[in-house]
Amino acid sequence: GPDQVHVHCNTLDDEEWRLLARAGAKVSISPETELNMGMGRLAFGKCRELGIKPTLSCDIISLNSGDLFTQMRLALAYQRFMDNDPINQSGAMPAELTCTARDALAWATINGADACGLASKVGSLRPGKQADIVLLGGDSFALRPRHETAGSLVFQATPHDVRDVLVAGKIVKRDGVLVGVDLPKVLDRAERSAAEVLARVRQGARALPRKAATAFHLKEAPRIV
Image 1 (tube, rainbow, N blue to C red):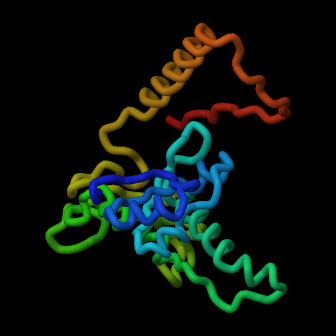
Image 2 (cartoon, rainbow, N blue to C red):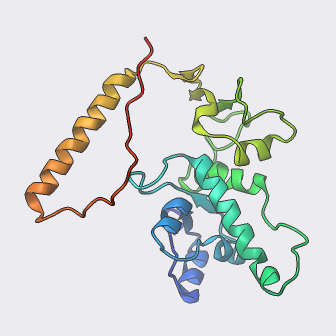
């Protein structure tokens, strides 16, 4: 039914897709996870074919990034590649791109709100909606010059460019800093939690997969007080 959100959908057959479309069900696509885990073709083409509004998700953020900027960029690049691959394979040069930056913004915003049954409250800036607002910019090199807003957001922006965030009109991030959050404490809890999880895994498993040999090491950056 329309209250369901089906994630991935890479291997559904045509009849299963028709069932989802007839039921008004929603579809969530996790571009970075699905591509990195070799899960198959992203479902944007089938969603377009059947009139389903695709949405974006991050899924396994222990493997990849947890931000929707990355998902928008990968999703748009993937679908543009897929749409034009037959033309490229024929030796011709594509004359147009079928998906736009504004399409990708819709996948990440209003489509997601609609899939969660919240389109009347969030997902776009409209009178009467809840003031959930993300402000980007500042002195970021990536977002200058600003000729086309949607293109800058989808192709250049990163989480580091998010300056201010409001949820229901309440400021939760100001000038790039979380409000009311002890970030060092949260990061310390995350490190301790990861260590505890791995300790339990070692107790219950015969052996963990070996790490690949590498010359790269992560060092903690010095804290500026």
